[in-house]
Image 1: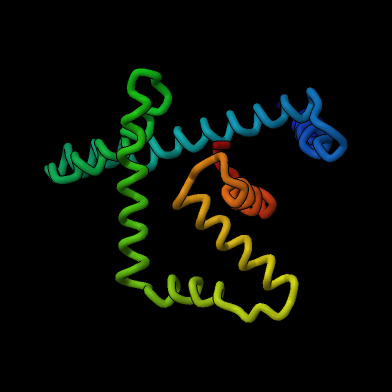
Image 2 (image 1 turned 45 degrees about the vertical axis):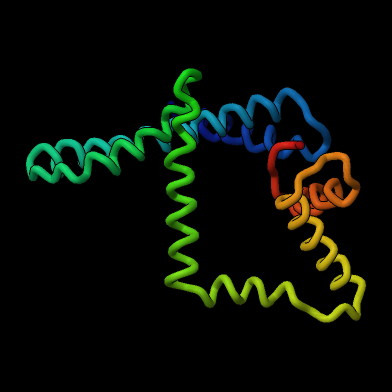
Length: 170
């Protein structure tokens, strides 16, 4: 493709993404689908060529490091998400990574965790602080006691949504 054509394609997709400011439309949906598809495809191809294939060929095949097989299988389980019958197996690596991340933060960098907890304790002298505390408490109630009929649970669902956090509806 020529550079002029690439510039026009880039301009179309940029304007398509920015068109969401006015309202949801076909140009935005096309641009969004193309962006998500190319990003996912690029990530899969790079992961295969940079990590999976060299691990199999060099580390396991030539060097005989067979202890890499289990972590490799756990990482490959992420891609079972694309097959309907195997989709549930994609949860295993996610829970493993969440556990490793939580364990690392708690044991190796507890100051990071405690500074975030300490930041939520503040004086209740301004409206902003009251709103912040209401948001923290209602969000914790939502995640610990999810009962969709209660009003505070619905409030706990709305506070993270206002700040841009996305998760499935109850």
